[in-house]
Image: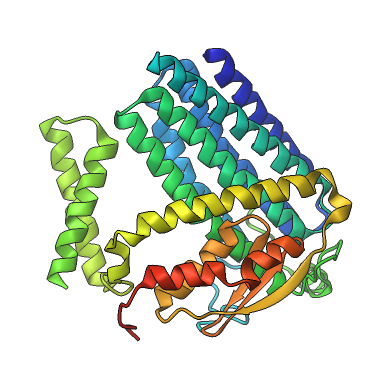
Length: 97
Length: 124
Length: 162
């Protein structure tokens, strides 16, 4: 059983490595943010798998919180890249339709 | 007997989830431009997460751990499209066309404008 | 309004009990306090009920999710095939009409489209959805209108709120 879990964890690590390759190569800044986003969601899955490999049930809370923080971080980084300011007012593109 | 069946089903789910993850990552490296890479990232965000969480749920049966896993899946499935859409929309508003291989010009210009006079960046 | 605040309280309490797992008096008191704080803040921010829609509590929702997961599965297989032959992709930007009556329905359409690999919503207005598609087959998923139809079915015969 543990063998299957470890293999799956390794597969997730490989996916994270691919995401890092994309983050390093770019070429646009959005490619890099996309790669960091994928890296974050795969971290959630990796932590969930490690919970089962090690048997420490408390670790699952880390995954739960990480899933929420990752999303907020990505949106915040996007806003920072766009406006150079986290408290900027709504500008072009922030349509309210 | 039933235990063995559930175990095997869970192995299949876990391994298939891992395989879809690797394929999505491979797609992110191989596809030619930003918008097509979004689709590859979508593979790792949806089916990979779905299969792995379902595989783990089959492992633990009904417990608090299962509820938390399903909550994680719910959060991932709700936030993934929002984050993807925010990325795609930001790239489009910034003038990145499908097929472009570098940052849109106005962003590069904006950097040039702000840097010389610029106040020292606080986020180092 | 009060009814909605009450159901929010119940929902938050259930969530807290589900993720806590420690049922000692002190911890439970902290839980009660945090639920009370969140409900009070939500009432103060006037966010309760703004997006309220009876559709959310219908038996059609689980049926729709099941349908969507099947859809996502086949779309994944399709994109997986493209990953191994990256030359065969034909990316395009297409526009499709948005027939849903309620704003929740429209947003559900946009999100379901993004969640399905092969199609990403670039822009959603009241009448039109602009999407980036990976190839012709992904485009057909949107242009044949099956997903729009399914979400109209999900909306049922609820009256448009706005």
